[in-house]
Amino acid sequence: MADLRIDHADWLLTVDRDRRIVRDGAVAVAGGRIVGVGRTAEVAAAHPAPRVVSARGMVVTPGLVDAHIHTTFQLSRGLADEVGSKRFLFERMYPYEAALDADDARASIALCVLELLKNGVTTFIDAGNYQPAATAAVAAAAGMRCVVARSSFDVTRSAMGRLPAAFVETTDQALARAAAAVEALDGAHDGRVRAWCQFRGLNNSTDALIVGLKALADGHGVGLQTHACFARDTMESSRAQHGTTEIERLARLGVLGPNLLLVHCGWATERERALLREHDVKVVAAPSSSLHNAYGNLREGHVPELLEAGVAVGLGSDHASSGIVDLCQEMFLIAGGYREVREDAAALAPERVVEMATVHGARCALMEQEIGALEVGRRADLVLFDAARPEWQPLYNPVANLVYSATGRSVHTVIVDGRVLVEGGRALSLDEPAIVEEARRRAPGILARTGLAAAIAPRWPVV
Ligand SMILES: [Zn+2]
Image 1 (cartoon, rainbow, N blue to C red):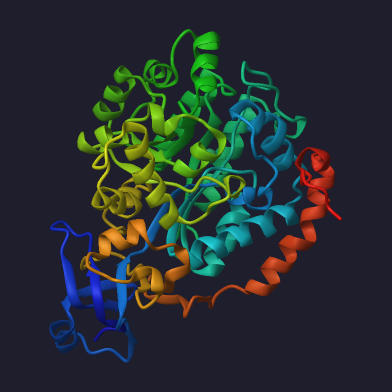
Image 2 (cartoon, rainbow, N blue to C red; image 1 turned 60 degrees about the vertical axis):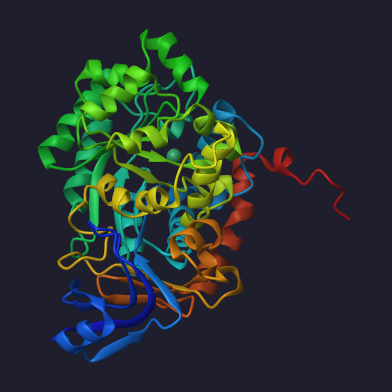
């Protein structure tokens, strides 16, 4: 006996080993896991269920995995426009982050979780912040699955810039606090929360911190993540400070491995890309932030070649400061971005892009066997897209429409662990009006504390 069945999906994109697309498809769920997938007539006969959700007229996909999102940056929209990487980080985002109190951070995380969930994300990897327990608690209360991490830096001034005083800590403090977060949070909330180690970027981290965090991650059987090779500035800063490029430095430190997740990597050299392949390092591409801040990851990047070589490349929306927190839109941007810069309309196929947002995201989260596909035995994380909406017409190929036409606005139903969290586009587990009101209420205070009000004011006369 199943607990729940999703019946009569017009198109069911399983993203399973054979990449089967099932017409009139169904998924049966018991104990939070998928127990049947196939044609509705067969699944319904084999798995009677007390609750049946109709997916008539819908396209059903595995839950989307946002492999890189800064949940505490959700209240930074509009604070960091038209600035390149150094100014983005050191003049805008770090001052913003340092200005957040615990309640601001919680309001930001709640708004982010709401937006992710309504746009069909069932699992996210938080990029690392100073509130990992709050991130875990808010996501878990919403019913989502996530990876959290405590952020670490131990170099106050680098070739990139100077950190706010609030971030400064010693290597030993950073390691002890990272260990405490992993021990407290990994496996929490019915196993839906995983906790990893993180250093925010290579240029503001000592070798001792990086090696220490890797040992900690290995010792606890968890992941380690950082931003790498994401702009000309990060590459040049690494050469100036360490005499080598970022991934070569990590190789020299012996920290490359299958539990390492590197975000961006657009500026990785040929030698560095070979290292990623050799060591099964996981990678995340985040096209909207690169486009917004002119990082050059699409022009310099090699996502099609990394995918071709078998590297797991997930997709991330990065942060609200680049505008978009919608993995459907990121899918279009990564596909379109590579085609445009290479003047090659076949540079990245929509099938590869959907894999990035599902099965590759699962590999990035180190949950390869658990999520990312609609297969018997995996967790029951699904999204039902309302294909009756105008932007889905006509529907010849659901993979193409999902990548080229849909946005998160066409998400109708979201299910995590067999629990319906979004229905009819409405979040059932979150109080949307209260979350939006709290964000609006807190924004002016945050803006005042950052001292950025004049820098970001509208340039046209406000009358
Ligand atoms: Zn990031």
